[in-house]
Each structure stands twice: as structure tokens, then as C-alpha cells.
Length: 280
View 1 (cartoon, one colour):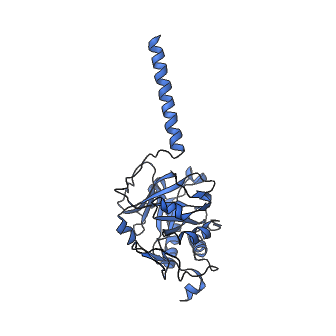
View 2: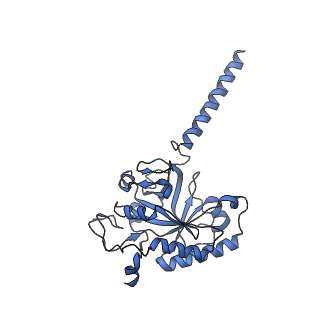
View 3: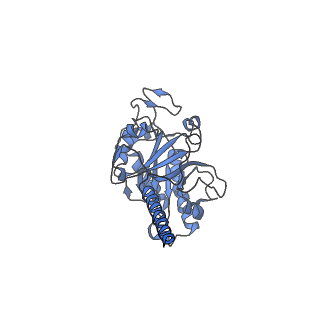
């Protein structure tokens, strides 16, 4: 009888411990992987409208050096916070990139044109100058004449019904290549491929060697089956930071694959904002 009580207590404690671990993970208190700062010193965030109004100075104060902000989805959906996020982050000293969510039910070229139109924004003033911040070499300056951007990115995942019924590789690669070529032509830099582990294995691996890779893997460091170099690793979707007020409780956290100096030297894109910029 006493032994049975001990076993019952141990089982109860085990169940309680597992339940607590699951609770802490779901609430972003613990992470499956948490890369050391000594190995990956440069960190950033990925955001969308779901994060609401963002205080980029607060985000930066938590040792975040850059952000990728969502611009568009498919060929007809624009992120409602894109313009505000872009305008505010430029004044925080953080570097910024923009990303597009690729959809399988829309043509690659049509998605590229929609992304470009949303990002360039004909109604916005070209950024001849903006307030104090850091340039791409980490130097603190009062004004910059250009607007240095991180390369654009395109996000590929198996979403919705496509998770159980994924489209064929050849068709996806054809449309994705159309998107990449048009975006590269416009921005002067190939987009970074922001991809889940599953979508990488199904569509990306071995197919897009000229593009930098941004791997979303919350279980382990990037494992590139075809040996492509990776640039960014999103190691969690449940980051806990101060500075945003949206319905999203968590924020995606990203590690750059390199040193601080390498990040300062990492590819710049001159953001072609507005009609005046196009005519120069």
C-alpha cells in the first residue's frame, strides 16, 4: 500500500512537471533553443500588424539591432501597419528589411508587382535625410543621404489546406523564381528566402543557391541539406519583449549568422521611395 502511494505521488509530480513545462513554453518563458550571444551577437525581430503600435526605441533598447516588417501577402493584401512601422523604425537607429508572404494561389509576377508597389509607395516622400541614427558601419551620424535597407525577403510556408495537400515543386519554383527575378530587378538585390523547415525541404533546398537563407526552426540550429549558407535564423516565434501593444502576445526573434562587423557590412539596398526617387 505504501509503495502504491509513492508511485502515485511520483506520477502526479511527473504529470505536474510536464504540464508546467508545456505552460511555460506556450507562454514564451522557456525556449526549446536559445542561441548564445557569444556565438550570435546580432539579434532582430520580425513583426506584422498583429503586433500593433511599436515603440522601436524600446525594442532597440533590448539589444535588438534590426527588424523585418511585413509589407504584403499574396497579390492583394497589404499589412495595415507597414507604413507606420517603416516610418518609425527609420528613426530608431535599427536596420530594417521588408518581407512578403508568398501565396500558392497567385502568380509570382503579380505578387512581386504588388509587393514593389506597396513598398515603394508613390505617395511617400523620398528620404533625402532623416534624423540621427547608425549607418551600416555602426557609425553614429546626424543625417544620411540614402536609406540603407536590408535585402527584401519572401516568406514561404505550407499554410492552410496546403499543409495536407502541398502543391508540386516545379510549379511553386516557377512562380517563386518569377517573383525573385522581378524583385531583384527592382531592388538591386536578390530577396532573402524566409522559409520553414518543411517548405525548405519541399521547395527551396538545392533550388535557389543565389539567395540568402532565413530559416524558421524553433527546434534546432539551421541544418542546410544542400549546403547553402544561411543568413538569418528565427529561433523562436514566442519571444517576450517590451515595446508593442497588439493582439499578438509574442514576437519572432532572429539571430544573424555573423559578427557585428559582418552585420554592418551586410548587403545594403537603397530603398527607391517615391516618384522623385524614381526620376533621379
